[in-house]
Amino acid sequence: QFNKRWFIPARAAGDHKTISLIDLDARCLRIAQEVLVLLCGGFAFGAHARARTMHELAVVAFFIRDNPPDVAHRYREHSVVERHKRAVEYNRTLPRTHAHLGYKPIEEEAVRAMTQRRKGLEEQYGADFLNVPHGWAAAALGKRRPTLRDLEESVDMGHNRPFYAWSSQDVHPGSHGNELSYLERGSGAHSLTAGPSNTGLADPAQGALISLHQTTTALCTPFAERESPEDSCPVMEVQAYRVAEGRALGELVEKAQQTFVEADRKLEEEERRAWGNPPAGP
Image (cartoon, rainbow, N blue to C red; front, side):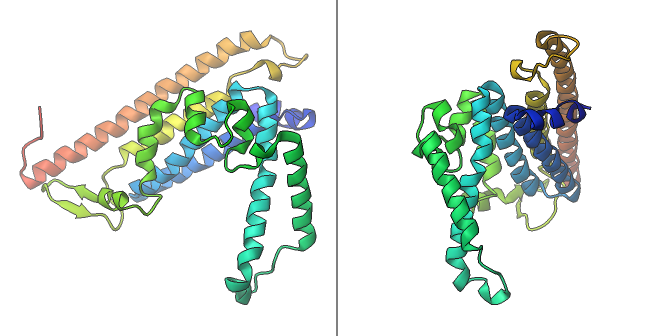
C-alpha cells in the first residue's frame, strides 16, 4: 500500500528522499530474511554479520530522513563514484586474474562515460564528494572523509557502536574473530565452532529486529517534503497515526526480543543440567 501510494509518484517527481528510503527499506527486508534463514540453520555468526549490514542501512536511512532532500540526491548520485572505481579496478586487474576464464574488459567508451560523469559530479559537489564510501554525506556533516561513526553520532545512534563492532568481528580476519569462535558449552569447556550450533542466536536476532524497525520507521514516518495537494489530511495529522503504528511495531519487536532471550537462557539451563553443573550466579 505504501509503495502504491508513494513509489511511482516519487520517481515521477524526482523525490530522491522517498526513493532512497524505499530502496533502503527493501534491502533491509531482504537481509532480514537472510538473517532468519541463517538463524534457522544454526549459523549465528553469519546472522550477526548480516544484522551488521542492517544497522548500517538503518543509520543511513535516518540520516537521509533527517536531512534536506539534496542529501538524498547526493546519496543516489554517489553510485557513479562507486561504479567508476570498481570498473577501473576490474580492468586493471583483469589481464592477470580472470582473462583466461573468458571475462571481458569493460569497454573503454563505457569507462570514459563514467569518468566524465564522475568529473561532472566533482565540479558540482566538490572533491570531497568523490571519497568513498560516504563522500555523499561530506557537505552535510562538514567533514572531508565522513565515516559510519560520524553518521551514527549525527542521528543519535552511537550507543549501538559496541554491538556493531561485536557483529563485525567475524566479517574481518583479525585474531579476535578467532577467539569468538570458541563457545563455552554446558560442560564448562570451550569448543571451536566449525559448523552450525544452537547457541548465540538471540543476539543477531535482536540486532536484526531493531534495525528493521528503525529502517521501516524512517520510511513510513511522513515529512514535509512528501506532502501533496491530494492528501486528505496534513502531514502533522498523519504523523500522529504513523507514530502510533511505529510504537505498536516497537512493542512487537520487544516481545520478539524477549522470546529469543528466554529461549537462549532455557538452552543454557538445559545444558547445565545435562552436564550436572549448577547455575552460574544468582
